[in-house]
Image: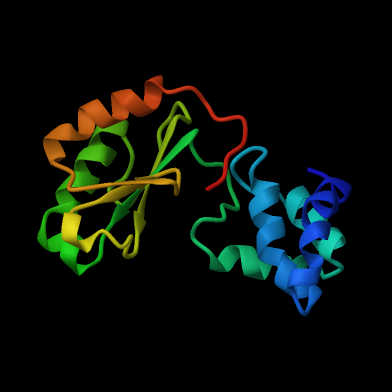
Length: 166
């Protein structure tokens, strides 16, 4: 994504923010829509678009767990690991997801690049624990560990979105 494309997207938002550095987060989210993660070129384009240094922009991007600085799967599954969900079995859900995709139990991306599994802090579904979120858009719960194969088949069979808003 180019600085001009990012500028075109964020310029209408400029009057909503007191400082240009406040535009970094919306610019990063938009830059990530193209391929689902942020390359060094994307970081530099955002920096140019908001007139800040690439180091500053990268420091913001590295702070947020939904901004990815390396490639992730076509679908990203975030499993809540906070107390309510852990007490209701989110660790088992996480283990089943990771086992099914052949990735380490702390999370990662499947060899075919289809699925990334990651831990997430509270997703706000404590009353429906354990829960998970798909592509930072759809929160599901309660999740029975036995549902994992069906969930993965569903995600693998779903078409790719034109833009990835994670």
